Amino acid sequence: MRMSRARKAVLLGVVVIAVGLTGRAAAQSTPEEPVAAPAASPSVPAVSPKPKPPSKAPVPHKPPKGIPTGKSVSYAGGPAGSRTMTGSKGIALTFDDGPDPATTPQLLKMLKQQHVKATFCLVGQNAAKFPNLVRQIAADGHTLCNHTWDHSLKIGKDPEAKIRSDLARTNNAILRAVPTAKVKYFRAPGGNFTPRLVSVANKLHMSSIYWKLDPRDWDHKKGESSSAHRARVISSIRKHAHPGSIILSHDYAQPDTIAAYRTLLPYLRKRYQLIALP
Image: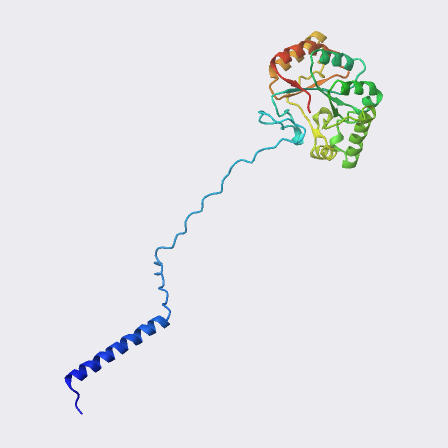
């Protein structure tokens, strides 16, 4: 049976609509596949961004305990890391090998008159022999320092146990005289520090101090008069003293040193801050 032209047109429209609905349903039910990124050309390798270098901000250098902070750049520089500077603008006068019953009282009197505090590096056997002088040094507000039991120049080469025994014996002699004393510093005779010696001192809670200026007051040259010796010591300290310096001197059996400091103390006081190591 033949369909009329109008019916054919209606039927064709229905078919077109049905096909369209079917395609839309298929599109909604099938997830869209991701589009692959184009491959890099084999002749031009992919270049990743260059990473920025890490920041190289300087790590602050902290001074060891017991050394005052300040504007001085360095406080170390001696053998085995021993200290040569105070860490502040203050100059530290240090006197080795005592106490001496002949010269130490003269020095203490002079320091008191000039209102100056200093650091005394005591030999243990001298401290044991003259405890009253150790008490006077402490009572005047000066700092105490361990200088070994018998001024051994080779102690840094001794075994660790022997070093520890020597330093502890010296501290005990000081503490018998002044039980409340704090011995926070150690100086090797002759400045002969070794890493082992510094390590043992550190384990006994003592910082190792060297010096920045040695006027060689201990060195009496052949034929040098007392006045010439004093003049040489005074000239050396005047010329080479700088803020922050640790200055080495001796109060044991060195009367010319005591005489030199009668001139030096007023001179230094006018120009520098004089401190005892804290």
